[in-house]
Image: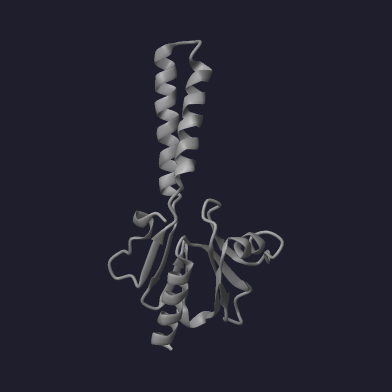
Length: 159
């Protein structure tokens, strides 16, 4: 588990950034080097610059694309979406096999997804709002038990 990825933010009951795994960063480095190799026959300087630029662009894209999963006060936040905890239904912790099924053959196309493929576990949170066509949210988490506990506690506290 990446401790830095799970550091709570001030005022949050639970907070986790779904940061890329180490192997993703290694893949970024390989792609950047390969891009540099493409232009290496033209110029060594161009190869180095291409490697640096491609690596930097990919790194920025990964960092900017890292979603926040949080329970803050009476709100569940997953990426760009927010929902009041009073509108949440059942919370289910999913291990790696259950998560694989949930995001594959068990997926409802209407579900809201905040997932990262490099995180094997997560939670499925039912939506109890009769006006919302979304049946549940499927959220990746490195600490699904803690996330589920925070959601349950927030829902109990806000009734």
